[in-house]
Every structure is written in C-alpha cells, then in structure tokens.
Amino acid sequence: MNHGLTVNVNGLDLHYLDHGGEAEVSAVALHGFALNCHSFDEVAPALSDRLRWYALDQRGHGRSDRASELSDYSRDHMADDIRGFIDAQDLERPVVLGHSMGVMNAMTFAAQHPDRLRALVLIDVGPGVSVDGVQQVRQFVAGPYELDSLDAWVEMTHKYYPFRSKEGIRKRLEVSLRETPEGKMAKMFDVRFREADFRGVADARSGIWETARALSVPTLLLHGEKSPVLKREQAEEFADSVDCVRLVTIAEAGHSVAGDQPAAFTEAVREFLDDVL
Picture (cartoon, helix red, strand yellow):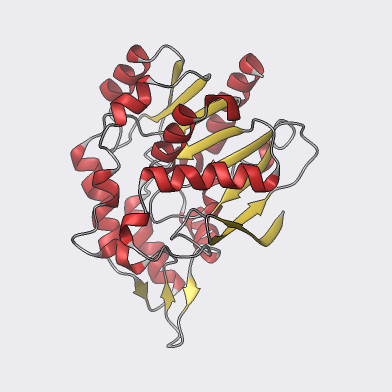
C-alpha cells in the first residue's frame, strides 16, 4: 500500500491511499464524516483480487487540504472532487464505495455522471436516516478534539463502536490521529466542523430523495443490523423505491459495517461484484 500520495483536485491537494494489486477494475472509496481514508483498511486487502482500491481523504478530512469556506463542503463540491480524482488518475469507470457522508457524495456523483462508474456500494446511509443516529454522530464530532493519549482515545471510541475490539480501534486510531506540539493526540478533520452553525451534514440531505431516485447503475446497499443511523425500514424503503438498489443487512454490525464485520462485508461485496462486473 502506498502512503502519502496526493493529487490536486479543484485547487485542493487531496491525500489518498493506493492499496495496489493487479485487479483490472478500480475502486474509489469514500469515508464518512470526520473519518478518513483508513476506513477501508480492514476490507481492501481481502478484495484486492477484484478491485484496485484508491481510498480518498475527502476535502477537510485526514491529510487533505481544508476548504477555504465552510460552504465549500457541499455535496456538489465533494461529488465534483470524485470526478476530478477519477480524471486525475485516469480511471476507467471505477466502482465507487461510500460510507455515511461518503454515501451522499457517491450518490450525487453517480446521479450526475452515470456513465463514469460501473457500480455503487453504499454503506449504511440512504435518503432516509434516523434523526437520533445522526445526532449521535454529531455528538461524537462535537466531543473532544484532542485527548492526552492514544489509550484515552481507544477507551472513548469503543463506546461509539461497541462491535469492534479495542485492538482493532487502536490499530485504526494509530493512523488517524496526529500529535500536537503539546504532546496530545488530536483528530484529523477541519476543526470548523465542530461549530454549532456548521450545516454541512444537515444541508446534505436537501434533495437527497431526488438524487437517490436518479440512480441507474447497479447499487449495493449494506445495512448494519444494529445501526443507530440507518434503520431496517429506512433501508427497505430505499431498496423498494429505487430499482437498481440491492439491500443486504449485515448481522451484528453497527453503522461502521466494514470495520465491525469485515468478513461479512467482504463476502457481500464479492457476491455483488460477481453479479454486476
């Protein structure tokens, strides 16, 4: 896996991971809000025979540049980053995967440019989501931005990701935190996301059903059985309303399906790819 790669897209330097491999079909993977490109570390190697993974730090996240204005974190801006990344890498109709916020951006890109991708994999978000679940995500983002140690982060994060072992959480956090000049460990996203008047997540839902109904490429919706964000009835409504969407529920998974149940995630994606590629 190649670390520390950047590409300039729409005037911003975007960081990404190239997981390598010889697969003929490429994949662009998009993390959730306040997360980063390492969200797919547990599953990309297991699918490397089918997909050449490019995991992107979306604008304002991880090691990518921050946008100058908060209004630049719109769905349309972030979907255009997907287009620009695909162009910059000269990728031929990749599979696009998104988790949470990444779902919103992936759907927007797919609705606008259906000829530019082969398929979609959407992880635990749809046009309808649980208000309580979204509020949990917001509370996590609004919580501590830095703590004294990695151990402190592991303990706090485990409360939000109870289906993942502390060892797994530690491995993820080791590549997802930065050390401050004061020796503390801090998150790696635009600190302005924590501001009370930041509307990026809420505004992203405007017109989302119209975007979802415009989808035409083969789409896999992976729903975490225990997710607080996407309830079963909301996942079913999405699949029932949009013909190209196939629903698979992953048992004993919360919102972070790929990290919570990587083996089941890999199996579901592999079966989907066998059918549509």
